[in-house]
Length: 167
Figure 1 (cartoon, rainbow, N blue to C red):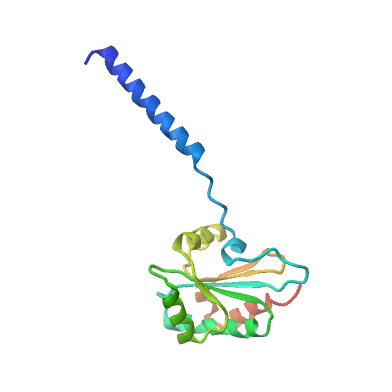
Figure 2: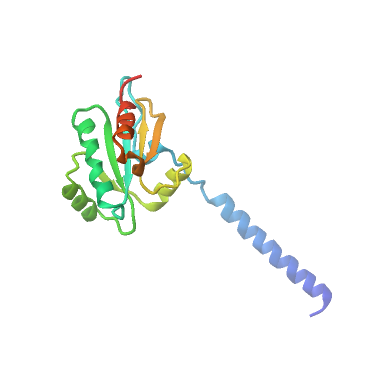
């Protein structure tokens, strides 16, 4: 191949790749920003709304950690907060979620969530922990995000429950 042919060939390939790249760039919608409210499904808050508590956990968490999730039954049952459990992990299905909810005795709703959403939420919060609690105030603003492991101490649990009290 002559020198001029190589240049034309290279220029043609570069032009083709640039065109394909530009088309896919322009045609791809930007992913929606991940926020605690979007992952928790927190609707637009009404005046006097209760806090929303998101309990993010995995079936791979230790049994003690999963059993500690019952502490959120009280605030949920008493209507002090809207508590939502988010179960993540490979292969999460409604059947696995229902089995965990029954086995642990959780009275608040729990739903499976895909890993990508949880990874986005961890990134937005700056957390590396796979399992954590997120508390949003009645206006949907982040009040607190704490790894579940930190709630093993009664004092830490008391501080977290205090965030549910109106300011």
